Length: 132
Image 1 (cartoon, rainbow, N blue to C red):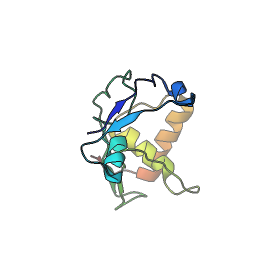
Image 2: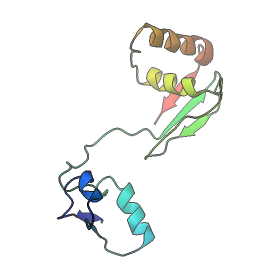
Image 3: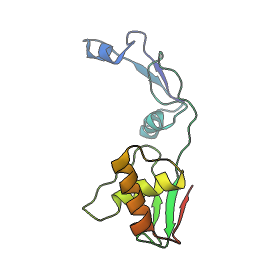
């Protein structure tokens, strides 16, 4: 478990002061322990004044059967996911598929038209989208 002990650091701005420091307590000193201190949401390094993270839903993967992305399995990273690609590679399809699976309404007329277009022309009738 990693714990921050920051008696002289009470805010991110305090880290700019010369001589400011913080200590990370680990059960075993290693690079892996430090890495885990940044990854584990229960013990993630944070200011002692910050509230503990709230429970939240997490997407593990998204799959398509049929349509433009037929047979595609997309695994999500628990830390950060970025969609990068050229025009027509499926970035909007991924976003609109998530919106479709979660039954979320698109906000605004332009977003509704984009969503409806992806559902009609890319996902098409009979495409199965699954999210875990």
